[in-house]
Length: 269
Ligand SMILES: NC(=O)c1ccc[n+]([C@@H]2O[C@H](COP(=O)([O-])OP(=O)(O)OC[C@H]3O[C@@H](n4cnc5c(N)ncnc54)[C@H](OP(=O)(O)O)[C@@H]3O)[C@@H](O)[C@H]2O)c1
Image (cartoon, rainbow, N blue to C red; front, side, top):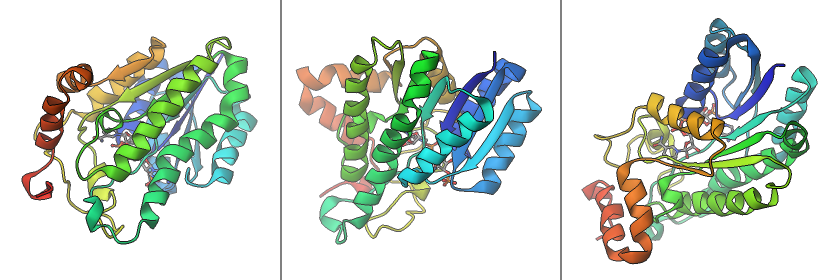
């Protein structure tokens, strides 16, 4: 039977790499439904996955619109008849000190993509995931476990994902649908350059230290391992794991670690 995996944010970065790695592993037994806004880049990734043997369906969609999320699921089921895995990966970044933001409109837009896009896709796919006893993956962030300065909007959206999927995991235990939440640290993709700045424009620069960024291949592999193992969580990097443990015991130390992740010029003074 063909296994059907829907990935949002599949035209670049972590989502595209997950698609390629899954295609390389499963070949013809896999159908990938790939969603993002940019149709051309999506087709490129679909072509790469086809070359590795997988069946593909590219669906241009903006997950910040509920109707697009519903249409994505409808098209996946119309084409392949089932959904085994939903990977809620589409997301945007943001970096700005809260007091420098005049218009909070983009805070709402960010929440609509990072949180609501995941909620809308999950709601639409849930009957199919239950029928398949399948899996949901939520790509949160270490910034969804620990507040990071300059990231009030992003951390809020990722903490919200963390809470939503933690609660949903328990609701879906009886239905045998696994929920894996992934918490990447800094991964070498373009996300921070594309993220919002204080004015709500594409930042063009990263506010984080990029030197030790995790390769995107490693991040995708860790998420796939967690998903296949139906694990609750995938917390990335030693610092991330330590920060999570220490948060209750030594919060001052964790604050120092979070400040150290941000470039000097981007820190609050
Ligand atoms: N890279 C990191 O360091 C890092 C760390 C922690 C967590 N994460 C999380 O990992 C996920 C993937 O990030 P990434 O680094 O791979 O980012 P990326 O390279 O910028 O890729 C983001 C993907 O999401 C899509 N996307 C953005 N807005 C969308 C929308 N409104 N509707 C549908 N698709 C949309 C983009 O395509 P289009 O622009 O064409 O729509 C692209 O395919 C995000 O949720 C991010 O928050 C990343």
